[in-house]
Length: 286
Image (cartoon, rainbow, N blue to C red; front, side):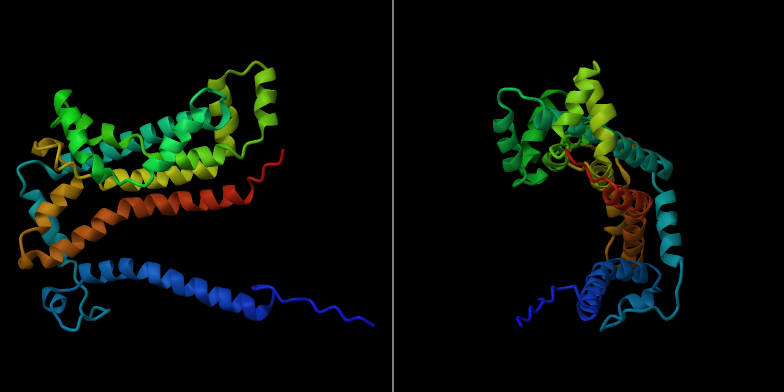
């Protein structure tokens, strides 16, 4: 009698499940460690900040670093609320514009048969290899010629179109069954209506993920190369100026790091459950 032995797959037994769980926990702790360290540093008193070797805990927590940060921010020539408005305005405009442009262009590249689409897809893939800092000089020359230096255009327009956002949306839209789009066209729907009323609801994980990445990138925009007026500067560059006063403001510098990472973290916590839930129920079959 022939005995057939089943091969144990990784994760197919209790031991494998435990090993995977431990591995995921270690990876999660590794990713959370920088956040934990930033928070601990921000609530340490000055005498604990310079202890060597540095400790991973705080003995006497204090809010003095945040109070000093607010005091310095309140003594600036421009009200701190103006900087907050600039960052919120830039982040919202860049996020909404990037979502709209990336989704519209991705629909054309993924679902519209037009000459040059394959070549454009190759250009996008090549553009993924380059960082935005490579194009700073060209951006400055173009914006200077168009009179956009030291305006809101200088810190919004260069960031509303990214190859990563376009590539992400295109990959998700490419999985939409053609039969669904053809059915919408037979009902008289135009490309615009198909894109926003048929395709977009079925790629919700993609545009929610894009929204998180776009806001995170927009919130970190400094614009120090293109904006010189204090009334137009966003929070990151102001926080850098506050923290750049030497060793005396080490605590203030730690507090600014926590303040700057709070808005993207809050947005991620709000949207990540929707992303996971939608991805779990978004199976599409032709």
